[in-house]
Amino acid sequence: MKERMKQTMGPDVPSVATDSIADIIRLYRCDVDLSLLRRQLARTHEERFQDVMDRQTAAEEFRRAGREARRQR
Image 1 (tube, rainbow, N blue to C red):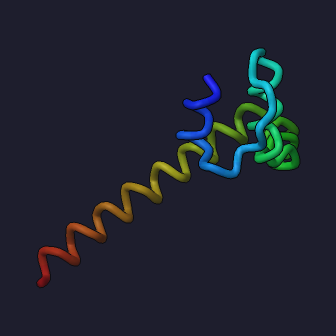
Image 2 (image 1 turned 180 degrees about the vertical axis):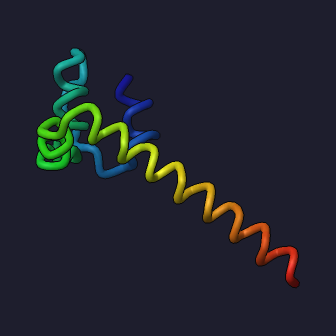
Image 3 (image 1 turned 30 degrees about the horizontal axis):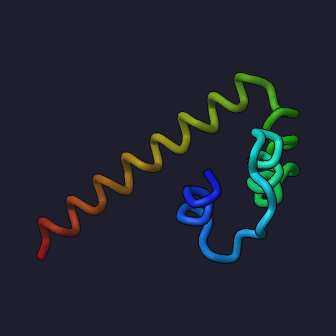
């Protein structure tokens, strides 16, 4: 398990015992921005769903614009 974590996280992983799930979670938790999670959870499910739909629409527009740009070359 320790070797896998070093491969995933790089050579700078602190040499702590990772014999338990709690140790693994502790290593990953330092990189999680809890303020973003709290902000999302403060929104209603309708607001979160609308955000996902807006992002999907934007992604489709980017794809369309990319296809159009390639076609004009």
